[in-house]
Image 1: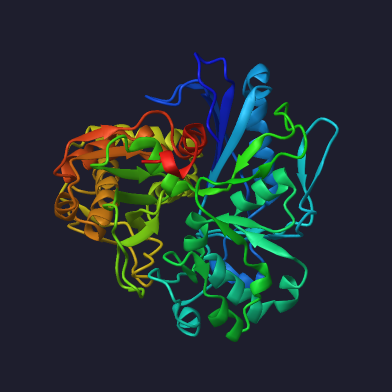
Image 2: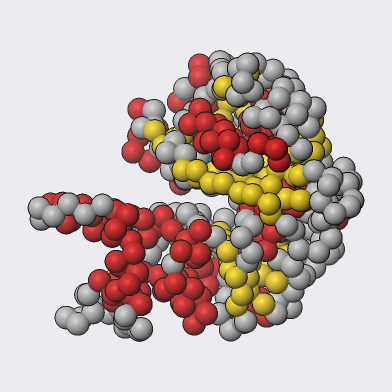
Length: 478
């Protein structure tokens, strides 16, 4: 998949990221394989894809409308220059990990005469935030033959849940994968789902050393293994587009879908001694492990750090917190609701900047907030708490700063800075939408970490997916 050389005349590489609340598309100049990537255009759109979960899932269910996600992708593509879309050479796709969507292989979408992809025979997406799999339910499942634990929101766990509560639902589909796997399958007309090792590991019941599913174990448990995707190396080619897509030529190369975490790290970590802190909807603190590192043979559900496959046979050490920008968004919604109850309607879009200004005026606080509203995968029963409350510590500035500090301190409890130093990390690279738009969060990161902190270029998971395709695959990923 070597890109054309030259001075930018070789065309463009498109990167797409299907995030939890928004999608992003970015175009990189294919004439720049070495040195900093050159983004020629980008666009982002909110998906507004959250829907009321199925009744069986209860209040803990989290589901999204795949059609709205695909529509948002189309809106992003339409916002890119048409002449650049016509010169796209290859497409890289990443997206939210762990979740699962179902479809009919080879019949996942139709195409309009204008080159618009329209989903067909597709279920809702059960997202990574889904909480229907209780600790008791997870304990009833067979232990994975993998170094990674199983958690609610993981694709395999969600399929087990459906197998017990709605088996007829599963009979309606012949393929399953993450939402980014679905998009690649639809673009390329794949009859069999294809999944990268990134997404396979995030699903559970996948052995990263043998690069294989725990098929025997799953079959014995009655799991519908016919739904398991084929697995390819991250960076491999999945296929070619079957139709013209918003001007992107038919026959354009498409890479196997990747994990947004790995792509975010790849886009930001320009040195092998970099760790990356990504604060978006959730929080990930990741550091590449030395080549040759092998994870433990069995999972430790209580371990706050997991090791996910990266590129070229290497691993990332990752502290993945469920509580990040979503906690701040919950606080904003709560404030707006309180004010509405008091008879003063204030849009949430105005609440957020005002609370940030209040926190900037409050340089420090003794108020302490543990912001684990959603628990953590290694501590699913943990709830949020507040301590150090005093009469002078309840202003909006105090509370907002304590909340931002709590988000940062929470991930540091999971992966302390001293351990990063032991691994040879010399610099922290900050990225993610919540960090980019929140100066208070940036202040708290710089306060908490005993490392120099810099902030990533304006390329995130979408840029990382494009960058990998630009540089030719996993062999060039280091």
